[in-house]
Image (cartoon, rainbow, N blue to C red; front, side):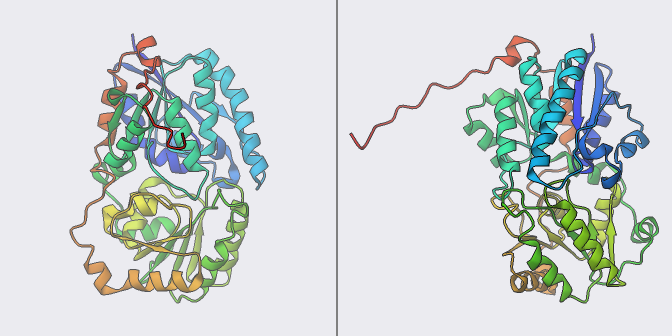
Length: 391
């Protein structure tokens, strides 16, 4: 009998990481793959990226309309509730043998909660990482404790998952699956990127990937410094759309206003994975607070300026320069990133997030791990003895 493995994807960001695991699972003779698309995938505002999944030849087994058309934390919270109601019916009927989830988006709390209630084992990709400036950190750790199989990107992340009292046989260091794109596909040339985006890439182009800081009460409070810094740069500025979080509309409006005032600035609503990685390879500096500046940019030895709180605590290679959310600090970091000495120092560097072999490892484990109560029953180490120094 084939294993029924359900995979949830909510946006262009996680789909780009899931593409190769999905490709491997769909081709595996022992797997009955079920894809559930929800959230921003179904939103015209964020590019209706569900079409990208279909264009890649995947069948979508369920569509969950749950993303509220709002720009607030209340909207985020309600999105979780709407998704939970819909997924309860979907999973109740589908009854997959395994549910595969990735990373740390708040919407992932919905499928995880439903799966726990329905006794569906969960496999989780990219647990054990740290991003102290976003609610993603809490979501990621919650998903880890709700999951039964773990695929971490780094050895340090595996150690953290193990420290959360997870059994060693459940925790696998696979690497970041997004890096599989770089090994398994041929990136577009500079000319092809220009043709696809209908722009001419200038010398010292800067790519901006900036998202709301979801842990802050004012999720866009650091953006003032970023845009002030960008206003003082002569470079070509290319913006990617932010995630669908509270404050995203504010950032979109500011990016569009910035681009409207400068000929050499552009805003891209949705870039498929191959186009994004190809563009990242061609630009000179990446600026923002996106995980791609930490996880993927190192594979190109691409200088990256990481702004503010959002990615605080995440492992990083030497191509990343951290900058406080102050215009002067950001400009100083960008100047360093553009310098010949800094760029020369990145030669020969390696990416701590893997070698582009994650998908094979993930699929190998998912297709061989024992199912049933053996997988659901998580055993814990006995509590450590301690001494009450206060007497």
